[in-house]
Length: 137
Figure 1 (tube, rainbow, N blue to C red):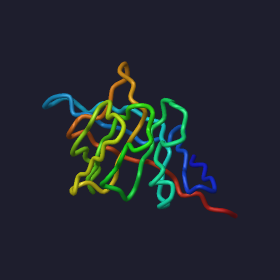
Figure 2 (cartoon, one colour):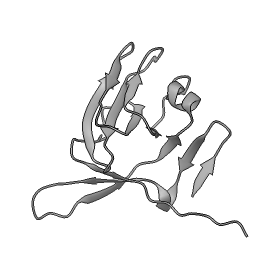
Figure 3 (cartoon, rainbow, N blue to C red):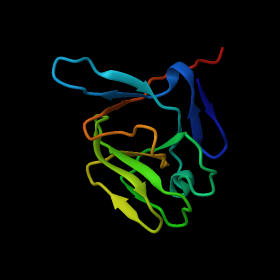
Figure 4 (tube, rainbow, N blue to C red):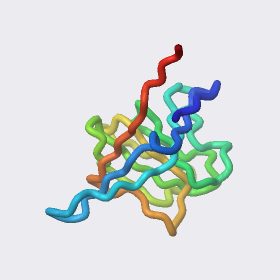
């Protein structure tokens, strides 16, 4: 289920949370890992990103987006660029303040506060967002 607030951010929970599929090796089925994230689609929300947010374990999906900065950030970020087919094309771990990252092949960016003890995306991972369309009656 997705909850939408006035800032243009959607929190995706439960069965609708995006799946990350990681290719382990040839002949091995992909591993499904669910990540809780918020969806930022409005310009102001994308520009702010995780700025003014207390560190937490949730990720933010910026869409459409192929360029992020860490100006004003007090904590390092993990960043993954995702192409139009949902494949991770570039990743960065523990990006410090005053940095700008860009990938012209990306259509979306996933970012979160850096945390050394949790896995992060790798190049080639598949990002899928599952969801239902709710109909008001």
